[in-house]
Length: 126
Image (cartoon, rainbow, N blue to C red; front, side):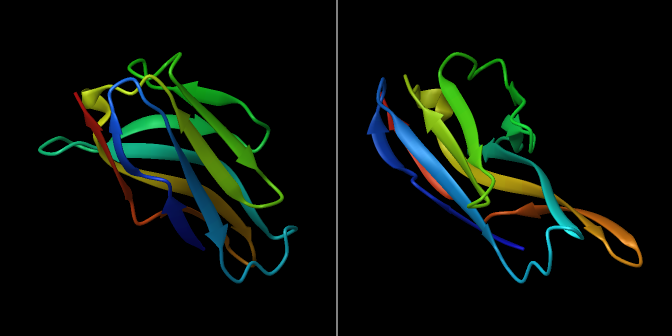
């Protein structure tokens, strides 16, 4: 599975951005290969990567305290795409944002994996 993130950029404080991340690859059958949770992480310069938001295949969401009320995660299961709507952006939201997708392969051996996108830069100026 490959994840392609897009939508990052430079925005002034108080502005908005929408990130998208689409999963692609040779998925044989949804009966044996499932994408479960999807989410977003971010890494600010000099800091560790941290979780921002996650969403289950059923639509349940969780958010980091620092983004609650400002960010909204959503997904389109048919398109295998996860979105992150970011409003009221702050300079401290600056960083590289990575999308993730957790998959389960129900083959002869069950394989559970976390896939990472390549990252998209978000810069919020004050």
